[in-house]
Image 1 (tube, rainbow, N blue to C red):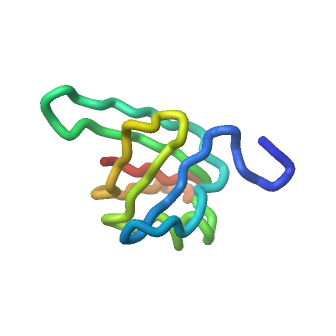
Image 2: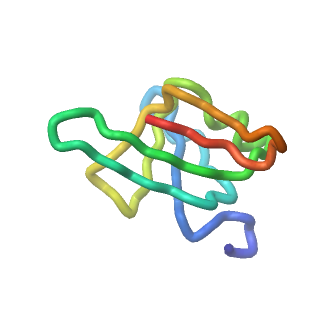
Length: 89
């Protein structure tokens, strides 16, 4: 993790085509594209106030390491302890 709190994995959040921020403290990111379907993404990140404000249903997620893929949040889950969030496409 860098000094500014961002992980090496960069996930940007877009709202109506405008970048609104970057997810902090991503612990896991799995892109599972499907050839003939929409596919799925699973991201585990810290349940911070900043992440909660960014990661809302219908927002778009983009990782520059996978330039041909983007995801729209349609399901949000958090664990019972409240430490991590999981976002699915």
